[in-house]
Image (cartoon, rainbow, N blue to C red; front, top):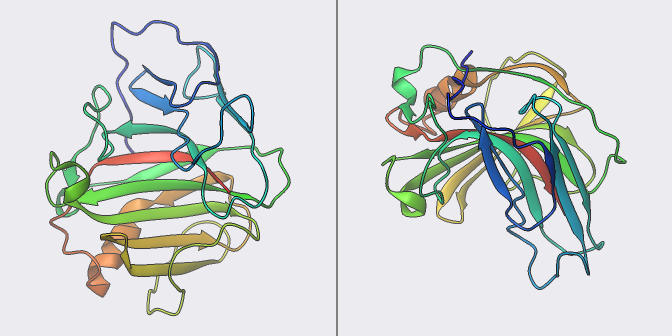
Length: 232
């Protein structure tokens, strides 16, 4: 398991943040009110999306939203993360990323989550981006790897689940989805068949299985680790 070191310069960020792309760092983590798929919708008129944090951040973080129905695609991925996403100019402080898959000693993610919304219209997912160059930005992306801890009837993962992955993880049964040509990168998702909201996911096991299957080479850089809700 990895941890993030607290910076001596950390100040309180406690509060409720409802503006598009509100972003703050503390305790080695970052939250982002990520509304990348909002389209022409206007915040405060057509939808609301908020993140509430306390001085215990990243613990006790609350994510809320209210979007119009039937938008036809992912609207937001309000999230907490560590590292540097491909679109970021700067990563979080004292991050264990980037690191090559082949250099991983351990990569276990522990979580304890609650959900109060009905089951459909969103997922709760871990995500990590892989790249051939840690400083190459979006053009260097090779893979998007997701772990769906909650799935309703919508959204659905990209690609299909008819593949040869043989993956044994903690938690409920799961399926592995893959789209080798999703945008300009390879998309994979481990999708649990029922909620897995408290426990551990061994990301090294996942990436080693992708390596066995030839889906990754092992020389890719892991850029970050994210946790959020994809809302449609």
